[in-house]
Image 1 (cartoon, helix red, strand yellow):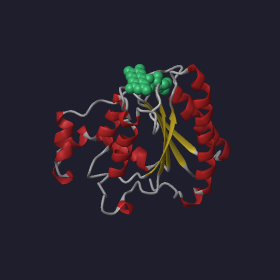
Image 2 (tube, helix red, strand yellow):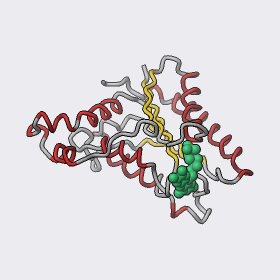
Image 3 (tube, protein in one colour):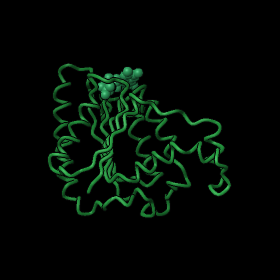
Image 4 (cartoon, protein in one colour):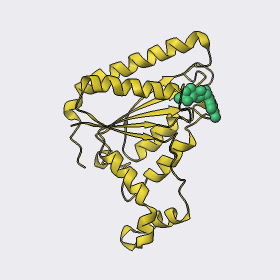
Length: 217
Ligand SMILES: Cc1cc2nc3c(=O)[nH]c(=O)nc-3n(C[C@H](O)[C@H](O)[C@H](O)COP(=O)(O)O)c2cc1C
């Protein structure tokens, strides 16, 4: 059975474009794969704590040297890593805030990225426990950041997420951008384009389902 991890990071609880679009993907996916197990995590509504002094002490200690208190400091981080490892497919809603990802998503990534559990695998990405997983990142933003828009150099969201995901070996990442949302003439077209891209992703990922392994956890 496939497990899909559905993450949202918009601070908005209503009228959120990224939430609408990730929900669309999950509905379409379930329509084609009714047996899928869905796990949801709402980073925008239930923000995770920022890492603190004890967390960093625990992170820097060798796992075998950690005291019970230091193990406890990483308990939430361990749960988030287990949750990610148990998923075959991720769909992540990411509004652009001040040219990059929301702080709620950064707090999640800081909790998640641990060299003892998700080692950097730059030399051999196939060794990463995440290398077989696919991620769909749905972004929403007011303006146009596409090539030729004049704003492309200001998108610190997609390059950042691609870099941080590749560090942990999650390289099969598809981005769908709902942009130009400030322009009433473009808004509906942009959303329709995104829904179409998400529908195509359901089809193309379905074709690859045979190579999505059953969760090892
Ligand atoms: C705090 C804040 C910062 C924002 N910064 C940007 C930005 O830098 N660039 C941009 O295009 N839109 C920006 N926006 C607009 C949002 O990206 C846009 O409203 C998007 O639809 C939000 O996603 P959501 O609808 O899922 O909440 C910002 C919105 C907020 C609330």
